[in-house]
Image 1 (cartoon, rainbow, N blue to C red):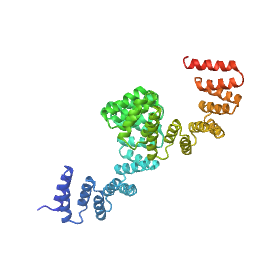
Image 2: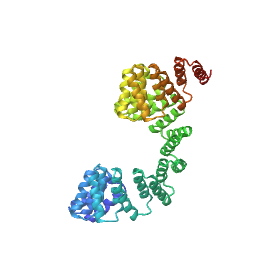
Image 3: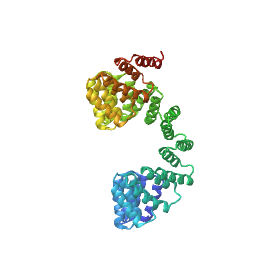
Image 4: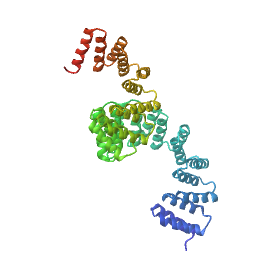
Length: 444
């Protein structure tokens, strides 16, 4: 006949082999023989945790601590179960008790530090990972996570130092290279960033994420063709990678290929119906292709998902203006400004609508605000000049057209409008020079 110790050994062996249900039955037998058998409760708790039955696991760890109140691992495991249940405060409490009982329990520091990192308590997280590194100084993942904490604090130089230390311990660690690549990108060290992503791609050729990350870096520095290549490779590896479709779409926008961009944004929306950026960009491309009604519908969908999305209001306002629904356009531009009141483009575009509505004083106020925010905004200078032209203030209008042309020497409408103002003042030669310039710019 077996005693409870023999049964416990069998249960532990079954659990190690992955035969969890059978192990549970043996742990039950051991506990039936000895209702105060802490080791059996501990083993059964581990089995329950393996099955994702965290409440039952916590109940068993409670029993362990009732019979063995100084058992550090029971606190640690109960903390882990609480963490899995989404109860970080209870988890932190248990991890804290675990390290009080065993100051060298690196896993407890690691898990507590991770919770601190994810909840924004960066100083506490750093302190915990200092302890992890004290106990296990050659653990590359500890250095990677320490780097992530510094990255969350936007101290990318220290983050790079941590990732580099991890790489010195394990030069085939893709997490270290990938995160260092992210940090280098934030620091504007693009060559180093791309080199790290290259290394991640070499180490994990079947992983689309590093290709996506390299694509974003290339997009950020204006290498749109190479970015498209990377996003395409990422999509080849994972045809459901909605962010890669979105990344390729914004690259096509920069390449002035709106049809390709629209196709990719449409696929991103299909794969991730709640991806607001993809909806907004799809609406933008529909408008660029003069499909204004469809654009309005798409941007309305964006605003259902995110009612405070200034870009969605802005692009929908433009579409309303294009179909001559000026009241709706004015309302949307105003909503965009209420959300983002430091955007010169929003004021300028609202000013244009106000001009079309013959609300010239209000339009001037908007153009002045746009120029207050960006004094080199050529379109705001031009449109302010246009209002002055309508008001027959020809000399002031010419000054504004002059500034617009200085800032944007190929702005055809500025030369045309200045020609009109010059003609009104009787300056026929100046007007003719401006119209000749218009012809040259148009290739005539």
